[in-house]
Length: 258
Image (cartoon, rainbow, N blue to C red; front, side, top):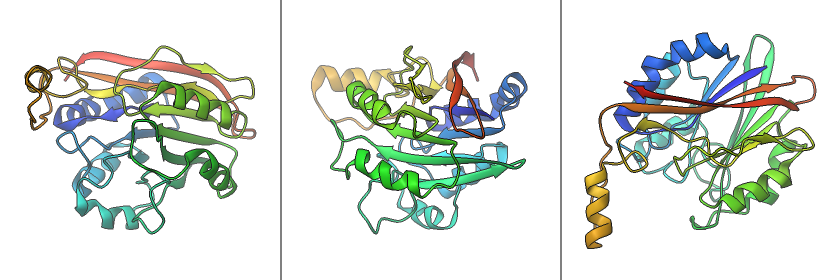
């Protein structure tokens, strides 16, 4: 099976770019499944029920989140009712929503797990040991993990821990696509960060003037999503249905899109 995974979609500019480019991306790569991280989709922080519906309508098969999963509190009911929307599984027990799902199309089944790292992040439950439990709950060998984390070292360590047990560990959160994509010895694909789908002329999607003022003055500033041309970042994976091993991983980066 072929999977197209799109990095963090940032604000209106990112949503517009994905909506406009997804038909061409599908024509170019012919994915069986399209997955996207949507935790920055609502004005750069969180996601709303309306945006979830928008993403599913344009052809995204499942949506992952991250540390901003609950910044829009109205999303809680959608997290409970929509199995194609998942949040990090290592939020405390009792938190609304789910941290894994299985999506199916044309007789193929794909497991999807969402986890947050802990280095320079909040006090989430241990993602390493939790992965052991989650894998046992997925009834297909093809499993992709969106590991939403800050530190490259933690992402790399997690990928080695998961090698041979999941199809891919795809880093999100830092919004800058890395060039370290590879397949580990036991068949797990890894990249430190998939990158973002959002404004190019920005600081990781945010208005650069606002960010510069914050660095220069140390005064609090309300972040605003930048406007203008965008970049689409993601990866394409070819996964063997019977074993779950990944045969190839290819970076995707389309620039100057609107």
